[in-house]
Amino acid sequence: MASTVTLIIAGLALGAIYALVATGYSIVYLASESFNFAHSQLMVAGAFVAYEMLAVAKAPAALAILATVACVAVLAVIEERVAIRLVKDPHTQLLTTIGVATLLGGVCTVIWGDEPLFVPPIVGSQAVNVFGGNVTPTDIALIALAIAVTGFVMLLVKRTRAGLAILAIAEDPEAARLVGVNNRALVLGAFAFSGAIAGLAGLFMAPQTFAVVSSGQTLSIQGFVAAALGGFGSIPGGLIGGFATGIISEVVIRYAGGVYANTVVLALLLTFLLIKPSGLFGRLQERVV
Image (tube, rainbow, N blue to C red; front, top):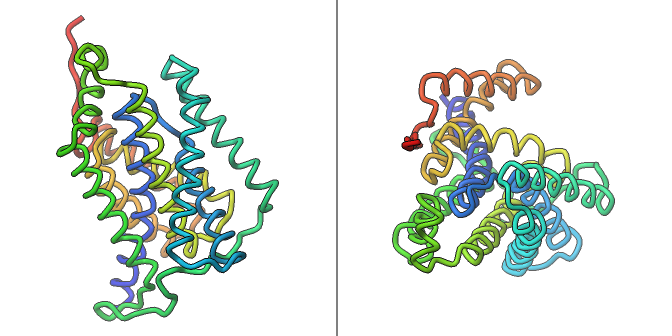
């Protein structure tokens, strides 16, 4: 029983990281119909900023959070201005965001190297007992963060004018423009907001995954899987998809080995999408041609 609880919570914590990647994907997708493959690398950049603040500068937790969120949000804004605004075609934007991810990874490697760097947790490191299983405070913090971010984003989308404008853009960009919605400003804001989430996620995940450039690729793949399972553009779907992906990955890692995790998860994704192509909470759009 204790080992099962530990496995489930570890899977949920891992899934929370994937859910935060999926949330970043969905925010940008809703606002611009673009898929920001650099989001996972922005989280990695956040992990390195957290390393500088917590391990090198020994800054207080509050200052480290503010600095990490601000730095990554600025990076996301720069990405939007360079890789999205100057490129009109969504398919080309996909390539430019991959280019940004590659560039970020290269810059991080030049500055910090390719060896994993330990980042001190800001919520303590002493394991606690939950239903008989040993759980780290960082695991609990990651799960709580993913749920809180999902709830906050849903509240913004449903209850604020900016959120409703994003939904209008996602439904019909041309009609949204005609009623006065400033598409460019909203897309820029979506990138800044998703960047802030990436920075916060990077800071909380770094004690678990360490600050290492190579983690960006895995985060990108698993975050994509989480978003696809939940339905592209669905905020709650990304959370559910992330948790499911994390638990499956943790089970495979525990009983078969880490080298099989990505393969099994992708195989299950393909099988699921054959049954429900739109994902759990996505919906297929039909257009008259």
